[in-house]
Length: 340
Image (cartoon, rainbow, N blue to C red):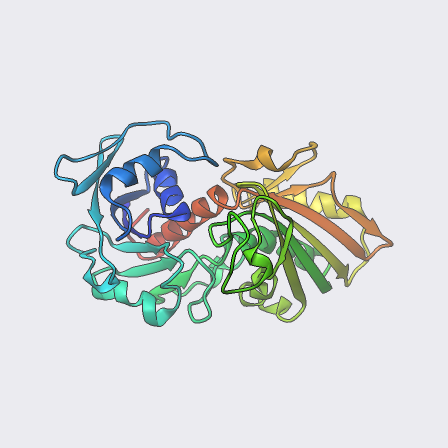
């Protein structure tokens, strides 16, 4: 039996979650909600995408505008501002993917439960909801949790790399930089910005230093690394495709060949499908459309001595993350006995 899923927010991640769900048989999206996008525009935005390309299938809306129809699958359309007003249960949604970036704390995401949803999976880091990265800490997930977070795309890239290094050699301390694609929070031309002056500069004209909570969030996903990692971001003028640079002081001696071997073993074993390994000379566009959260680049890293290591891992910050969110939904649904 497939999990019936609702999506709140039809922006970048919401649309990618719907696209990715169409490639699976364990999850069926039955309803979407976005008060700012009329049905015709939903069809257009789902069909055409500057980063991920044109949808390979048929997308239309019903004549009355109440449903999206994707490859023959009917999906109810809602346009409610208040999550409490979305009739998730009536439309068959058991779980909700909260993809607005607004209702990311327990006290606000809880509104979906009032609409009849049984569980909420938030597509953003949360201060109050427990955060999970597939293959890293999902074995600690308590099925009684009604609201959980899929963390961030960067945390999902960093977490497998950090876990492998920490499990094999121990991490004394580390600094991470994500060289991250432009996102919708940035300006297209110079202008004011609520968060920081630098963020107000033109996104496609500049390399912009920015903050990120991804490294600190690792402490919530891997408690033994709490307070040990920190980091920052550079926003760069590409539409999608990002890369994590993690530099660590290890607790045990290693060679770079040892590190690469550990990464390859994990990519081919317990983290297969989540974490990848490449020894080819790839660049950011080469990971677009890759459903894995993190692709270790053996050709780009290095070491000084036996304990100071720099590792590089690529990620499609939209597609990889959206696939992990669906994996997390499916993982929880299996624990709930909804999916086999």
